Image (cartoon, rainbow, N blue to C red; front, side, top):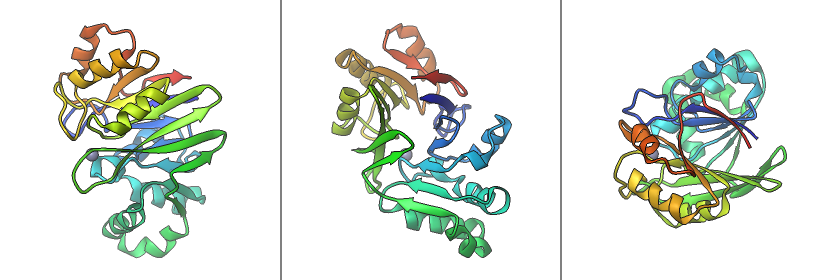
Length: 235
Ligand SMILES: [Zn+2]
């Protein structure tokens, strides 16, 4: 797996919004600015066929109407969208708000899949429910390929889903929004505990607010890595 970090920040940081690109063609989340970021990196949006959405907060899917417009006018190919049951209505509503006259066309340019287990290319993918905010479903995803298990927590507080992912994964791209964890977001205090409990897993902090990256770096924990925008990894 080739992984590129498109963004590692939360809403208030100067980093891009958290999102990731796998093998130059699979997106995990599509926050504001994603289409422009891809173009600046020289990645043609036509390559993007699969988008997995962790949850429907604005900083995780607000570039979807622009990606769909790229599909209609430039790329002429379809997008597969993987997300929870609420996704189809949320994407429809957002697109209607952005481009009310394009809805008929846009529907022909995406497939929607709410399966909990599915395959993309030779990855087996498992959706894992995590706890985030009241009234909003949030999911992590685990990509399995041979012996490699790479997880993306999405936005999450410490919960059973996070323990499941940490136990199963060799690499976990993990929410670490603030210095102190709370119900809706993992903090540095929580991720220290996770990295010490699950020593077989390397944790990569993302969705970071101010001060988190420096704090993680200062800890010097072997299996705990602070991400930067545009980092690249091969697993
Ligand atoms: Zn969120």
